[in-house]
Amino acid sequence: MAGLLHTPLALARRAEIGAGWALIAGYWLYVAVTAGVAWHVQDFFPATDAPGKNGGWFGAAIMMLIGTPLFVVGSGGVFRQVREGDSTAATQIRDQLATVTVLCCTLVGAVTGVTVGFGFAFPRDGFPAMFLPGGILWGLLAGAALGMRAGALITNSPDSRRRMTADAKSFARTAAAVLACCLCVSQLGWLLPVWAVALVGLPAPFVLFVVAGRCERVGWWVEYRRIEVPEGVLC
Image: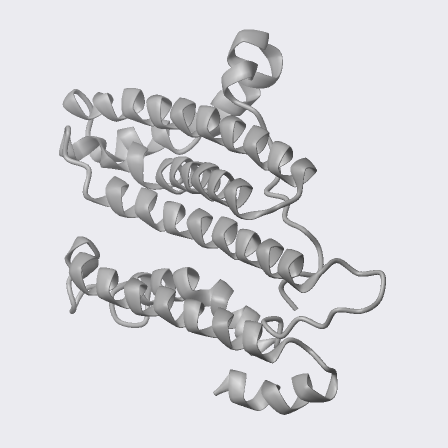
């Protein structure tokens, strides 16, 4: 519906209509695949009558996963307008696809990390260390690494490709370090009750970042980086 509403305005702006609808079709495919995956993994979330299922955690996770393409289509960002002196339409489309890929992979990673943490059972009493904030942190970073690597393959700018590849390696190392930290803390569940594991697991990832800032060897593994995407490609 948003694509139909934006088409007349895009025609008036002499934007790329065909390319815009091709992007809309691709984003619809992503939403359809996400819906299918959500149907199969819904049992990992709280039961239907439990807090956080209906309109709560599960719904929020779905909205996170489809929020980026919905925003791009709803804002009319799929219809690119090429002005004199600007980059070509193909370059703009590639940059947008790279950006959407990075953001979607990052959100998918965050949801995956939280879901895996909630279902962690080695031991079961150690799941708080793998859940929050650990799960969302290592999952988000791993998703960002995957998204940056995929985005580097999509973009046709050598500078962007080098930057995104370097970011992907950094995010991957940090995700591995945070995951290892959470796994180590979760093993306290063999000895301590859930509430005690939660008290230790809550600050553990943040302590890791503090130590990384003071220890060069740990700092190589744990780097603080922002997820940077090209400006003006989403709307």
